[in-house]
Length: 483
Length: 127
Image 1 (spheres, each protein chain N blue to C red):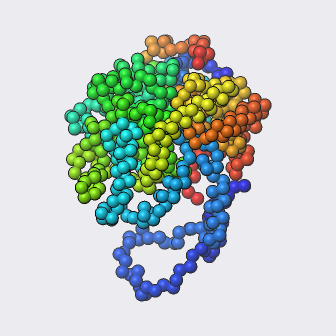
Image 2: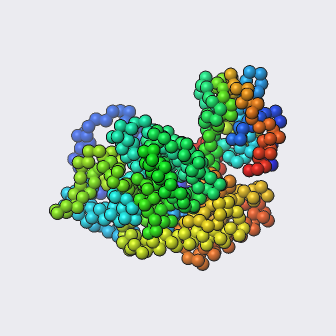
């Protein structure tokens, strides 16, 4: 059953509030400055008028229609939809954190500053970097910030000819987008037959016009770039820098660090790897971390621990400045800090180990029935292909994904990375037990059985949701962005 | 099985070229449109601009992905198919009539070097 919009439930005069009588003197609004006519509303805004119970029922029903990791498995590849422990929510809801203001005297918020400082220390040790900034509010914002720092670094060195950023074809789409927004020219690097960066394609593209290579390791096929030390040496040899997209950090924590691999700057997704809620709009948090070379260019203010407590440092002359209001999404950073403290260094390492184990277990099972073009041995995620099925009877990755919704699962990522035709990208995360993975495999196999028996049924899927197959073409071509 | 038009030549990037007098029509192959899925937007190149062979000339966007169009032979863009602006789905309906753009002063040698229909069919079979 689909849920009407709140405005469709509206009845004139029905309301959920009751104001006390006006106790301001008559004519009080005359004291307000005159607004230009064209900026003053001529008739009241059309807002839904509903009773409190209508509002409560509406949003309760909507919340029951949502699928989140609290309802069931969410193997959306490259998104690391791991469980978000309730302890993080509990602590982030404490009024000691919610009833403060970023502009109040810092002597009264030393605890919050210590959270940010200690989190940066922990993230530095997990990534093998020197220091960082919590200001960026999402992954792509982190990419933007990191690339701005790279740009500032070369400006400082007078190497303004470095306008090219090399990006492998398997990269997340945000990488070329961020590089373009910062003003770099994007150059694509091909993948070899094993799905890794093609060094022979990379070599001739490296010269003194290269600012950076952006890389995700493991890459979006869930494969570890084994030649990373060679790659980083090649890039550094021509004076370029290495950018690490931290989207897949969940595969390597406690076992390898981007710092050791030779990366100069990276962003993290606290909302993926460090278990803060995401999906449905965030809020996210995408801290940037750097080595000593780029540290002077970090956004300001920095946080420093002095004899008299934590202070903000505004004096970084080479800093690229602020990249968000105040200090980023503080309550998200707080949840990540709670996660790290609760897990401990052994727990963080175990999380990555279990994430890799779960992905390989799932790949071994699912690989019995569907092709995994770049091999069943992966890191924390793997990419299957529905190409054979599509050639056989027209069933696409999209059809399989939509039918999985009827089985009560969030689908895997589809049609990404572009290297794999009819791609289905699975990332089970460490949160799922072996029983949970087995149930998912059974459900996926039921979908495959159905695809062989009745491919037409899949074309119309999902069948058991409030709305069926959405018209994606019309949504793109004729978007209705308001009521 | 994708349709292969007999009156055009193909690039390995799945663009086709059809020569009519002094005009070279360029579009994308049936294989390309089927892989892309439903096309929702086509960015057309500026008229009057010269593009070399292998240069990225425009972008075709589908519900799945945005893909670069690689110019198959050098030439000057003399016309673009403006119908695609409002109706990009014409490419899905008949990719061999819905060309993207027309080149003048094109490189005949490069055209001769493209895959003929039979060679393109063989190439597709290897994918």
